[in-house]
View 1 (cartoon, helix red, strand yellow):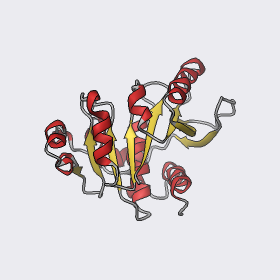
View 2 (spheres, helix red, strand yellow):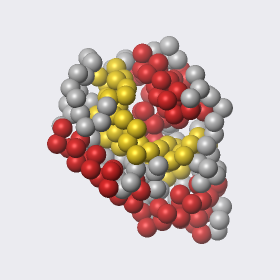
View 3 (cartoon, helix red, strand yellow):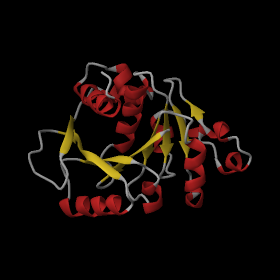
View 4 (cartoon, one colour):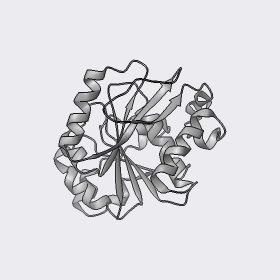
Length: 214
């Protein structure tokens, strides 16, 4: 059975795409098959990995039962697929993806629909140093109402440790790390390019949390 895990953020520009790509690679390193799903339809996963022109519409492939033809293969080994603007096909897409990977990481966008979240068993909720507690709590309520389990809060691009308490525990505090910029330029996961970087070490901890494997 495939585990669908959403990455949701308190607001825009907190690094969901960056974390999704690197967490997917860190899980893949542990011998698991991983797919990345662009659940927002904005194409950020494709641009992050330098595959902007390879974003394939999945509606036709769903109709003919060839969903594998809608998956873009990246040279890091990761597969990417986009929901596009076909929200009415969420249920059908998840049904077709179930069993095709051990994990599907869903980059859920800043304003995920309740239906998208309802098809994910678990999620990480991201924030950064400019966190707005009111918006964070509103997103928590949306996720809970959708029946998706919040594994914990993840602070990203932090300049210093966050000590504030929230409704859910902070399970990871990922520091701002300038080493990721070269990986971004090369359209590669930073965990692959800079495995010893502070950013990469924190991502590896999240992969361990999910898989139980170091």
